[in-house]
Length: 233
Image (tube, rainbow, N blue to C red; front, top):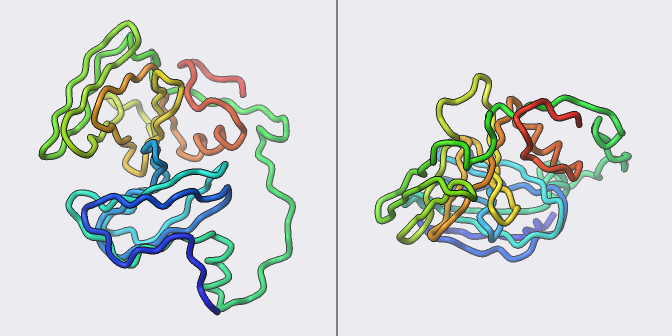
């Protein structure tokens, strides 16, 4: 069967490539070698494939303009992005897809209530010490606390990477930052988020003891950053 890819690139060497818009749904990404970042054009990370990870999956809640980048001077080869259902058919040898099933409903979507706790207290960045991202060669980064939150200034070409605030709370599995414009930065596999050149103002931070809770909140249309007390979702 002929394979239909939404995006393919035989070689991507230490550069960015803009994919264009991908529709809502589940997606499969694969590559050989290098370090590959997969995100939207606002640098929101969806997947980070290091040198030991050659394939992964991600979900888009809506049509999204996406990009990929070979990072840290690396070269990625045979990059492929395709819909997850199409990939499943391909690896299954063209077999018929399974019978349609009703979408799964999370406890939140079904009207249930769970308790989700923000591990960071206080969550507001104007009440916390400033955090400074790691800057690669050719870039600099500085930060300061203002009345609006943590103001980070990054200079140079590329992006810096911000780690969660230290000390790490017990059980920390992922972190989400809220920006001044109301958008969110979600930690990738190592809990870092990209900080582009220019000025970024972070207003709040939320720590989770389970990475899947972030996806659960996003899929339910609920904000992934909230106060440090248990949230009655």
